[in-house]
Image (cartoon, rainbow, N blue to C red; front, side, top):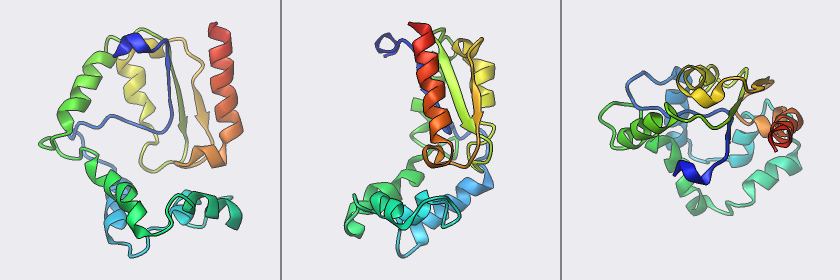
Length: 166
């Protein structure tokens, strides 16, 4: 529904169709999500203990999941990312790419430099989406959970971009 949007900003994402192999880090993440006995959202959002979060901040990420039954969606999410061409979700992503190939509304890309899964994923958007041209794209510092590692620069970039367009 492109008519609903005046512009789009993307960060650390993609629209895989299963036609290209997924990064090894994604496969490890997928396996981890299914095999780890305790799926700890706080630990995960703190880059498995290597990030900047305090114990209180980790607990805030844990709060929506009072027990394992609440984690069903979080555990399932990696399994619904289309990783092979015969995956049923591939067709929706292929259709989305067809729309994006004609998308001439502004698209701002804010990808991080160290996410082992999505790093470099901005290149497909830059190559295929006309609306990415002449936009003030930014490379953020950090991994996947960029809201924690470079959140102020990310938010500032999006706010500046939106302010300069109106």
